[in-house]
Length: 111
Length: 115
Image 1 (tube, chains in turn yellow, blue):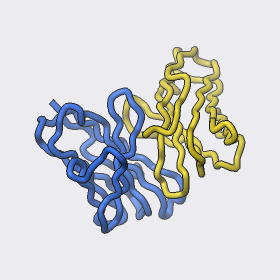
Image 2 (cartoon, each protein chain N blue to C red; image 1 turned 45 degrees about the horizontal axis):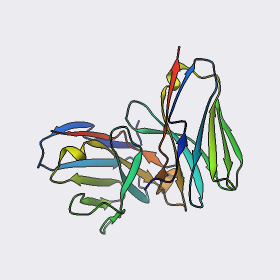
Image 3 (cartoon, chains in turn orange, brown; image 1 turned 120 degrees about the vertical axis):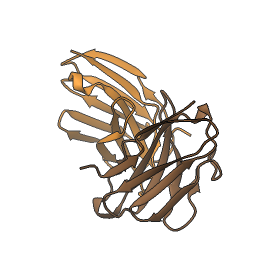
């Protein structure tokens, strides 16, 4: 079963704008990860945030985690057309690689 | 080069047949997993592939339909048996542990269409 919800389900923005995607989950977690998927192919790992972290940055990506609300957000700044993809959050309850995925957000960045 | 390679990357299958997907990791890993992604949906875990023993299946998935092998620490196979159009999906394997630490890597996926 899926861990939780992501919103929005679809997001369309202009190049240069920021994109924010949200993810909620249901159980306690060890880590939360964000992945990108282009055109229904393999997943690309973007960033991992641990349950004791609140914010993490990687390039144009900023991830926040609020364990009290069981939610996370992914911010992509200064978006590019190449950022067009589906974005998924995934959680694990303990170390070991077993992930539960959110529903995903389909991002479209128009040039 | 890819951490994980899967094959086939894409196939069209006749209903009632079975197809085996292979997943090869470039180094020894502790855990390997198989996921299904139905059209327009997110990923759902099918099972954990255990090295040298029977796979551990998630609710809704059974060994007769999705037999899995993992003969060593770098390789696993998933068979989709007696396929029907509802089995048309992307099947992805993932790997964790070993020298690559805590990052979970995914293969490119195998896109199966059952006609």
